[in-house]
Image 1 (spheres, rainbow, N blue to C red):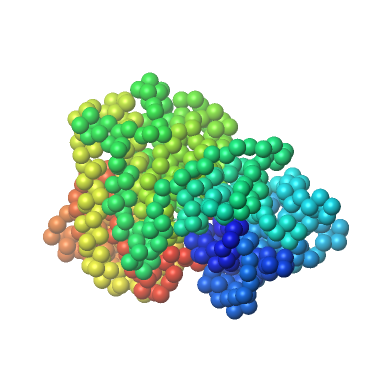
Image 2 (image 1 turned 60 degrees about the vertical axis):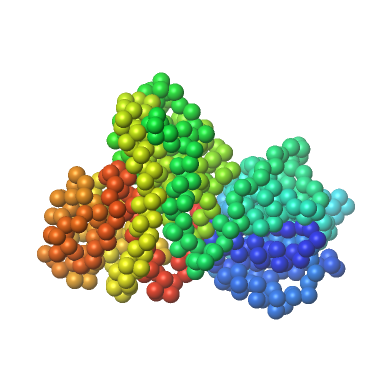
Length: 614
Ligand code: M6R
């Protein structure tokens, strides 16, 4: 959580920081701040509660004329300390010689804070981060003027995670950055340099980037950078050229990122398939994953671990892998996985799924699995993310940047990737050629079928708007579509703040049925699959108790039509791939309800896109 950015060069640094923070806002958006060093070498700091626009207004009101070529900025998702201006970053020492922006958590901050207070430091925030700037002040030696060494000595005392950028009025020609557990990327321009939590922030300025690793330190000047270990050893870093398109991080003709990303799904899924499926041989190929038939046959259990929406995709993955690859699959919340005693052996395969590739719980689950000797496959969207780097083998989602906090296209691409992975392993085992062919032929139709659902957006919007005033929703599905019920409910909850629960449809009668009355809309995901008749009975049970029934189905059935209050028809496919189609109307329902309520769908309250704290 939280986004940090720094700039050094010849342009107006405040403009670049404010602009870049806007693109990092999805990482946290309760408050923001900027520190810049002006032409007289004075530190100018502005911190505001609220969005970046608010900060921008204040910066231009009070500091319009500041001519600064060096600045750092931060957008916050509160962990330690309330949402107030003093708790916002950057944090400074009392003489305003140093300014620090931090993403992560300093776990031993209370001990450090006490030591520093005893030494005479005065704190002005409740945050864990503020100890960093006081430690740096403590270690800074006037005679040496070596910011790097003060930062490194400070970091040696710190336990926890950090991605930081530090500036100092005594050395107004450099930024010192460092990371441990929180992402940090360096952007290389012409006589200018950038540092940021992720590439989105700096993409309009440069595509040449260097990803820092844990326990690395970088000293940035406008024309050069040098990277070091925490032991001051120089390290050479590879420059990567990012191929994401800048247009991908703008809203284009859409009012919100979320709507744009929902509508991008056919294209995003096409990108996930491209170059990987070979229908005539019935096989899938992944660049970052090579498995022999012997290896595939030796796997006796797969454990998939993830959080939130990625966890829902994992549940669909379980159904898919068990069906096509005939390997037992366990799905675990990443936050639970590492705190129990997962029994792993060398015949197990662990799959971690994360859009951002930075989710702290998922990353720690990956590390725990590796510690126990398991081979880990990482499925991520963000290229160069920590999970991508630390996995033994990896598959990228190729969904493009996902900016809306509520995950949509990354989820669809996770489902597509898991379907391909299941077929990939299946074909190395017992899945026959004709089955591989049939499945891949069908898989390639999915983007077109999703486009057909999107073409009905207006109809779905009209249905959604009937339910804007409802306070509770139930989502019910069975089999492959049970996780879609969970995901539909999560989408509604997180962006519309309406209470919603997802259940396997048959579980309704074991409790949730008590909630049903005329005020309870129930969304049924009811494709014409092996469980269709059973879900029809569940619909009858809801109708018998005056519940309002919204059905997503591919089946034109007069009985269903007479029972449902609202029907959304989607194109048919095989039951294994139906989740990819059925989630689309549920994303749209959540979107239109939240939008009608006037809520900020891209940045729902209390949430952040990358959850980099446990
Ligand atoms: O980046 P990840 O996929 O690891 O993120 C996991 C969850 O934090 C994420 O899916 C979250 O639940 C989203 N807000 C869902 O829309």
